[in-house]
Structure formats: C-alpha cells, structure tokens
Image (cartoon, rainbow, N blue to C red; front, side, top):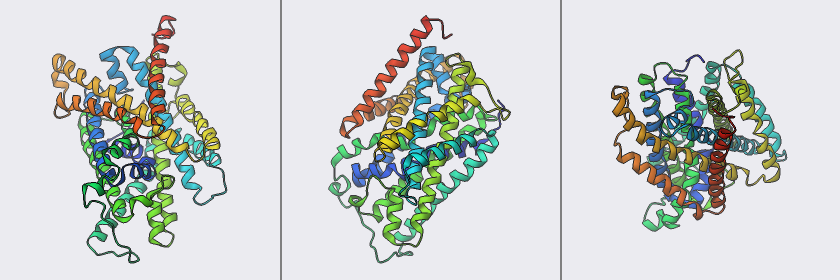
Length: 446
C-alpha cells in the first residue's frame, strides 16, 4: 500500500485510538473504585503507556514493517509468537471496537431513552464500516474531525478548571471540593482501591498499538515518528490527568455513578443550559473516533497476518482505495457480538467488553516489552547505526515495565469480575498457541 501518512496523520490516528470511552465513560468506574487516588492511577498508567510507545517506535524505526511489533516478536522468538500476538491484538482491537460502539449507544440513549441499545450498535457499526472503506487520506480527514472534537472538549474543560481555581469563573455558588487534604481522603479505599482500578485505567491507554501499524503507512518514519511520539505522550497524559483532577475538584467522588459519564454528570450538576447535550455529543464523537481508529488498526493487523501466511489470503485483497476489504469486513462483522450482548446485558456490556479488551492488550504490552529487550540487544550487535531513536533507560526501564505490567495482572482479584477476564485471556493465549502448532503440523501454516 502507498505510504501516505505523515506525522500529523500519525498523531491524529493515535489520539483518536487512545482517547475514547476509557476516559469519558470508564473514568467513572476508576473514580468509584479508587476515589481521589484515581489521579495517581492515571499517572501510573500514563508512565506505562509512555515507555510502551517508546519501545514500539524504537523497533518500528529500525524495521517499519506492516504488522509492527508482531513482526518484531517473530524475528526474536519465531513465527509462533507472531501468530499469537497478531491474533490477540486483533481480538483485543475487536473488543475495543465493541466497547466503543457500546459506549456510543449508551451516549445516544441519553437523547432516546426508550430505544434499545442494540439498534444504535447496529447503526454505528454499519456507518463506521463504510467510513473505513475510504482511502487513508479520507479516513484521516474524518478521524481528524472526530479526534479534534474530543481533544478540544478536554482542553476547554481543563481551562474551565483553571479559571475556576483562579476565581475568575464561578458556577451557581457551588464550592469546589478538596479531596487531597490527607492520606485518608486521598486513599479512602487504601492502596487496594488504586490497584483494583488499574485494569480499567489501562484500558484507557491501550490504543497505542495503532502507532506501530500506522508507521508502516508513514513517509520517513525515522524522522517523523519520534516527533509524533512525544506529542502523543504529552497530549494523552496531560489531558487525562488534568481532566481527572478537575473532575475530583468539582464533584464529590462518592456521587459519581459507574453507569454515567462523569463529565455529563458534572454539567448536569452545574445547571448550564444544554451543556449536558453538548457534552454528550462530544463523548459520543469520542467513542466513534475510537471505533474508527480501532477498526483501522484491527484490519491492518489481520492483513499483516495474511501477508505472513498466518491468516487466509483473502484478507490481503484490497479495494480501489487500497484498503484491505475483507479484513475490514470481518473486523466489523464481529461487532454483532456487541449487538447480542447489548440486548442480553444492557447495563454491563461496556464494563465486560472494556475489561476483556484491557486484559488482551496488556498481554500484548508484556510481549512488546520483552521483545524490546532482545530487539535492542540484537540491533546493537548486528547493526547499531539503525538505532536512530532509543527508548531511554535501557535495560532498566524495560525490566521495570515488565514488572509493572505483571503487577497490574496480579491486581485482577481486587475488583469483582476481573479474575474471569484474566483466566479467559490466559486460556485464549494457550488456545492460540495450540492452534499455531496444530496448524503448523497440518502444514496449513508456513
């Protein structure tokens, strides 16, 4: 495919994939579980995200291959791990798409409370599939519009918070609260609350895989990717942490419901005319943006698997816009699972899909971190001049990232329902590994 992405496209697609329902809707769960310490939880998640992105960019600058970290892992550990990572990433992406379409349906029901969720799920799935059949420039233009709305909204919310802190803006005589006066007020549920929230926090950051996949569609990645990298890290971390901070200053954290966006709840509380509908539109576009970019990354990974003979060759076929036609189609068809879940479990569908996606994404993050250690070592030995960008602190930061990701997995028993997600992910990992060696023995795979 033509390399038509530049650094602006990479930034837009990445922000579109990372910033989504995880912050606009999932943050209510994080705050409910962690209390005011949610700020610390997001800072820790941002630290993990920052180094993960740097590991991905370093390896992709050395070898900007379609399939990105899947290909890099295959070079180090053999094709079996590439098969497992690729299919886990695709499934994680599909689950991420499903959580975004479920969130979009929840937000739309704000205006149409009597319409079943599954109807909106069908509408948005069909619409975004059509969008993804356009060429990369067309896809990027649509994503620029959707991503800009949510980024601007978060920036305006942060400015609103700053002006309120300075006393320039007053709202209906409501006083800002300060939940950070003592250790007990900061950690009302102890350190356990922070740890229990980490899976949902990590779901808010797990769209980073798109960076490696988009670099394969990028001109001059060695120059453009590092610049885009720091813009992405700074933007996501700043917007997330400051937004959570001001939410906690504006709203008593105990009043936040897990089933409603805390941003919409805040504006309802302030009685600003039409503000709840305006912000609901913003969070709706945020979910559609996440759905759009997740569909892009999932379909590209499926196409990459097909290129390596680890998926049917039909997924390599492209339309006249050079979009992998059947890869996009299969990724979108799986959204039917969301329709079924939204019909059967309308109140729990988002949390179920978000935590499932978070677990699978973290397995990929763990593999990326381990791969990075050996990939840097291999490159230093064979061709050190290819190291045009280096993630700092190697190997200490690589080991620290691995330890922290394992620690997040260990926190799963602290929040109800997460153990089943962890067990399911492990079972899925084992099943994929068995599938690879079975298909290899049958000579189905190369």
